[in-house]
Amino acid sequence: MVKTKKITYKVFLFERVKKKVIFFDTETYPLQIRITAGVRTLYMKSYFFNLLQQNRYQREITGSNQKISIDDVIVFEQKLMDYLLSNEDNGDSPDLVRQQYHFLSRDLLQELDDAFKTFMIDFFIGNNLPAYALFLKNDGWNYTSEFILKNLEQSLQPAMFKQLLQSAAEKAPPYIPLIKFFQEKINAPIPVLPVYFWQQEAVFHSFVRFVNTHYPEYNNPEKYINCLLKQFSK
Image 1 (cartoon, rainbow, N blue to C red):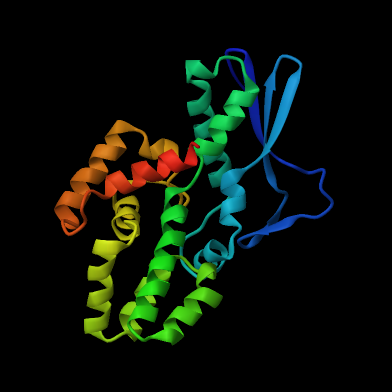
Image 2: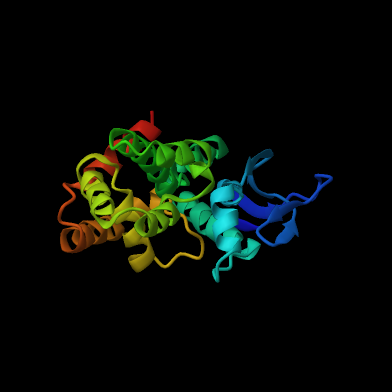
């Protein structure tokens, strides 16, 4: 149990459920968070745990050398909760902490990933490649866009793949520079870039420098992400 001012929290395995769930190669109980302020207690499902149960992560990580443990997720949740409770504006209100949690935990990579798939579907339809568009519509949501792009680089003609990347820089959400920035600059145990990371000034300016150096063809992608955050907060 961690205590900060009048609010305490605990990230724990919810063992009251009858059945365990599969988390990559391990059976475990779902992860939850308990927030307590005086006699008031709130429970929240772990956003990061539920996110990583999606097929796009289960398939890719299970088939790779990358390993993610339940302890990695617990530590990730604890860091977010410590960040939340260090904010004096939250006072002793567990409701406000919960509200901020739902906003600050959201994964920017997933948000841009989903929007990027929509862009690719439109691209393939516009370039008379309906089979690719159909795959993305039917099964693309079971894989990350990064995984799909790696396979497209092998299956498409080089000129078409180059056109896809050029069109992405002009019309798509900045998923490509963001995922590359995350992989090269963010040392995270799980493939998640939560909003509260992005809001840290050092991370924001590091991303801007990274894009200017490696992806100059993208025009102010940080503005797209900031506009997305405004939509989250509505």
